[in-house]
Amino acid sequence: MAEEQTDAQIAAHYTAMGHSVDLLNAGKPADMTADDWTDTKKRNVEHLELMKAKTYWTSESMTAVDKAIADFK
Image (cartoon, rainbow, N blue to C red):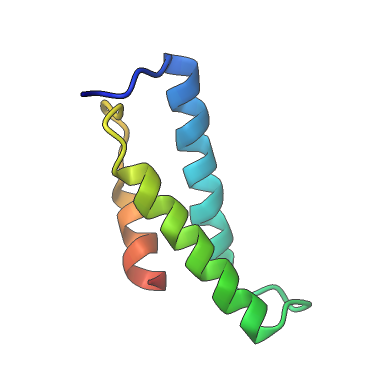
């Protein structure tokens, strides 16, 4: 059964995924420990994987999401 989401909700979810992609691609902040960065990467990749599996996506491109998952998993 497809999850019911409004267009605005889908757009917000997609934007949040973009924030995770941007954070990962920016790399480790100078003031972050290596352990914290490892944890941050793990949490954001998990977020992207969970969100990508949702059934409400329509024509949104997942290219950047797929790349971030592959690059940082």
